[in-house]
Image (cartoon, rainbow, N blue to C red):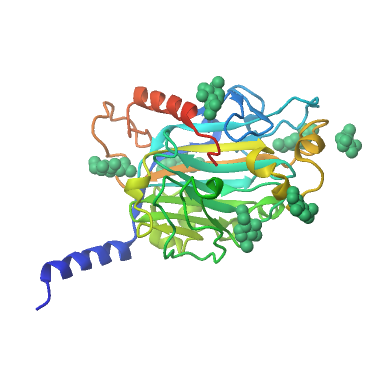
Length: 357
Ligand SMILES: *[C@@H]1O[C@H](CO)[C@@H](O)[C@H](O)[C@H]1NC(C)=O
Ligand SMILES: *[C@@H]1O[C@H](CO)[C@@H](O)[C@H](O)[C@H]1NC(C)=O
Ligand SMILES: *[C@@H]1O[C@H](CO)[C@@H](O)[C@H](O)[C@H]1NC(C)=O
Ligand SMILES: *[C@@H]1O[C@H](CO)[C@@H](O)[C@H](O)[C@H]1NC(C)=O
Ligand SMILES: *[C@@H]1O[C@H](CO)[C@@H](O)[C@H](O)[C@H]1NC(C)=O
Ligand SMILES: *[C@@H]1O[C@H](CO)[C@@H](O)[C@H](O)[C@H]1NC(C)=O
Ligand SMILES: *[C@@H]1O[C@H](CO)[C@@H](O)[C@H](O)[C@H]1NC(C)=O
């Protein structure tokens, strides 16, 4: 006789999976207020050994382009840098952290690239590697394809992904394995990075941070779904098709390895990844620091993010967690109170371990 309870349980699970998940917008970073809710690192790169100084707020390396109303974050491409000095650039982290059960969508027209340049759009928990890291977008030097990854404590692997990319570099997400390579998937589309990304007018990166798994979609400008380009207040993952990268719960229990994430944009120069000689010489010639970072700024005209918006959606919408004291407008973030957010953001900036990306 069939176990009725089990059948019911299974069909409930099946329905939930088949139905996808609908998320409701909880936060928008866009337009003149884009930079309002981020912390600037304001220190040299002591995280990944880059030849870079991450500026504080108020720098002219982050601004809203008055023609496009989009956010620019760039490497200093005007100053001459002397030997033994580092070049100015940007690292910002969202003041708010987003829980399991969130999606973040970044609409970009340009990403930084060029010899010595190492940009990323990613997230992490403040006690990394506890709480995990999700790298939605990352590249170095003149590579042509975006690389995506998770970094976690021991025990999280990519197993049986449902994804379109066949370019799986590594499957163990443990930061202690292979010098913290993480479990890396490469996007086969050359429109996902560098000059071809820019030529296609960029596109949209979608990161789903769900109990059932972590997924990343990339849509080049001409194929951005209308639910995204229309600035819909809800996102249903059923309408997004197969993700380019996917790390299902089966190989990595998301609730165990991941906690609420700060979203981060950064651009560093050389350092542990871009500057490693055997990686640098795959796409560039010469020596990362002496031939590029120092001297005039002529190598950095393509080293900038141009971002139309970042939108965050949550499974609970704004009618969510516990003790938020205010019931302010629909777009206010009430995931936690602002004092907690400030403490957590400060902790995030202080606690990042070496090789965090
Ligand atoms: C949604 O609400 C549940 C129950 O209050 C909470 O545990 C969970 O963290 C919330 N998820 C998000 C993404 O806010
Ligand atoms: C990952 O694999 C792709 C395809 O084989 C390759 O082009 C890329 O360089 C690899 N990335 C890393 C970081 O090894
Ligand atoms: C996108 O939608 C949100 C809420 O639905 C709204 O607050 C915001 O102004 C819209 N953004 C743009 C750029 O139209
Ligand atoms: C790149 O550097 C590595 C070691 O640093 C060397 O073995 C390799 O031959 C170099 N490749 C090229 C294309 O120069
Ligand atoms: C910048 O430096 C490079 C390398 O030294 C040199 O080839 C180039 O002519 C310089 N450009 C300007 C505008 O000075
Ligand atoms: C520097 O980069 C910006 C784009 O970020 C570009 O508009 C500008 O022409 C570049 N060159 C100089 C010398 O500022
Ligand atoms: C990096 O520098 C900041 C500011 O001095 C400091 O708070 C932080 O602990 C340093 N991080 C590491 C990993 O050294």
